[in-house]
Image (tube, rainbow, N blue to C red):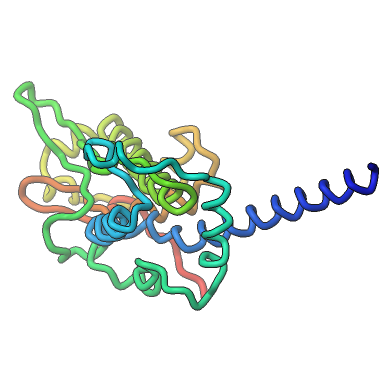
Length: 236
């Protein structure tokens, strides 16, 4: 009996180790969603919707989908996620994120933006990007984790918008050209400290989240990374 208990414990430990390995591999492949452009994010999530890894609850046909054994699905996805040669939609987007247009002063219109809007009372509002996938639910592990990455990024940008409005509302109200006169990009640590975040654990996600996002006025826009906040120096 003791031998059987020991065997079961060993199997459970091995299963837990395999699950952790799968989760880590999946996170590594999805981390690009922290800093992807809006077009890349939309395309990636749409592919997951078409493959069935993401479900939009407002589609009536979703009610007829069969129930899924989540543990069995995790096991079946394991070999795929850990196979370095397996094709993975969106993986090309992770190869050269620094070459994207979102952080260029000459980036095209559209994409992720915090919009500066002046109300009738003269007060300015900073409106963050909308999470267009808020009504979606993901099938674990792939769809669930992908939506979580996107949701956390939108929340971060919502916090940035609220912070900018509170700290620099009057300056933002004067327009892009006046805003830039004498402006020095803010250290990213300032935002992290003032919003109660941990610089050690949140520095990377924040630095990623503000890439390919613009601060936008009706007359023009500037990238958050490099213009509003200092860009981190690249090493090696």
